[in-house]
View 1 (tube, one colour):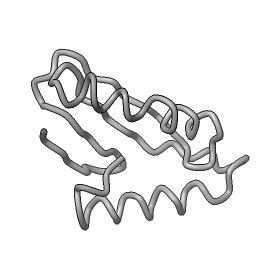
View 2 (view 1 turned 90 degrees about the vertical axis):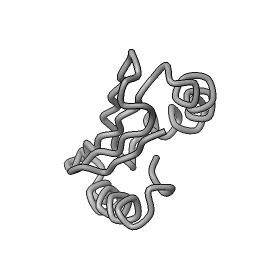
View 3 (view 1 turned 45 degrees about the vertical axis):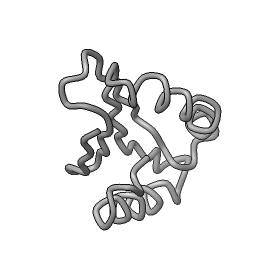
View 4 (view 1 turned 30 degrees about the vertical axis):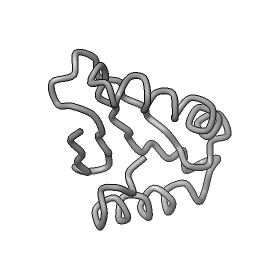
Length: 88
């Protein structure tokens, strides 16, 4: 499985996967968190690991209602650059 952290997005999965899912997410958003917590493991296990899907996470901080989201996105980006295993 290939990974990259180009710009403000993290990619996981095979580059030639037939389906690409792009998630625009905010680290302070409760709905984004629920998606990650409730569906993330199944998505990785059943779709990404099998080569059916490449998943692209894109930071989309809603600054007006989530003032810490941009700092959290920056921290995540730095962690993923240091070690791709830290990706989402």
